[in-house]
Image (cartoon, rainbow, N blue to C red; front, side, top):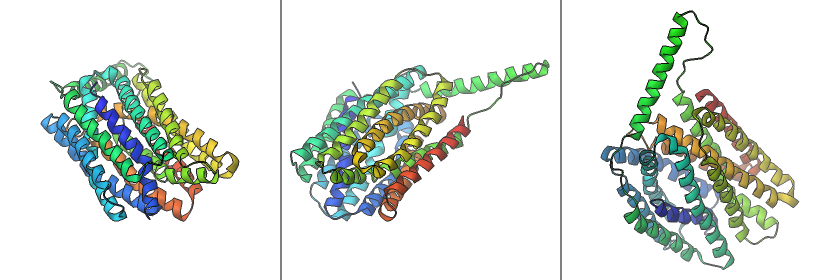
Length: 398
């Protein structure tokens, strides 16, 4: 039940994710403004993510930072209802992004401390699937708001109210764990397992036996690099994506509400992926699965170019690719989140969001810039290449 507040929070940001880029364009901004806004928000959220992760582990208080995130989002979204000035709108959104990430690290710690290691994949998948359903409903709200002619101020007010509801629900449902020890136990288990494998290998070698095993620790640097590159590729692709979808919808003479409808289907693909990820995986299959989903996501990025070359089917092709991308992203996120909680020590629980933020900040500026200066085919091709570079990094990690 403690996840319910996050459900309402994701509803608000699902609606905002598509509405905000379109709103910036509507009030006189450009793709470059969208890129600068997103990039600056990502950049400032990087030190914020590390800080919130450090302070929540330091104090062993997690609920207060979740409440801070939801309340600050409520206030900032309410302030956005008073402005149509692009620079001021960007400033308020950037401030909101700094406090918005305050709930990410505490949420990950709550899952890893309230459940045993054997249940992490299943629990992360359930959480992400549940909150992704909220995101999906938020997109549906955007679809109906567009179809019914709801104004921009009222749309932002809806987002603010949903965050206020998330804050109120979390006051009663979220609780700090009584004892924080599960991640420490996992770290000890990993050290003991490595030591045991080393002793077994040494014993066989001393006895003159042939061995076909290698004593190798995971390359944590490669994991971090792969995560940054995956986030970079995703941000390059999806930051200008609402504008791309809006353009092909207009070319097909369809109502603007179809933009939200397509992203609803993308989110539905994510929910399906999280449901599949709720199955339990062994350590080796989790690692092997990462490479497969990255390769598929990179291939899907290249397939988006077909949506431009076959104009008669552009909307249906783009929709199909986005549904598949949502499904694949869910599989990737569950595996990497679980692995990160194993690899990252206590006190650095915000590192996952920091790495994602580094890639997201760079990609959110590069994507719109390339789209405006070179075109969307170059965006899709660049994103696909970076996805495959991420695949190389994760192969080195495994």
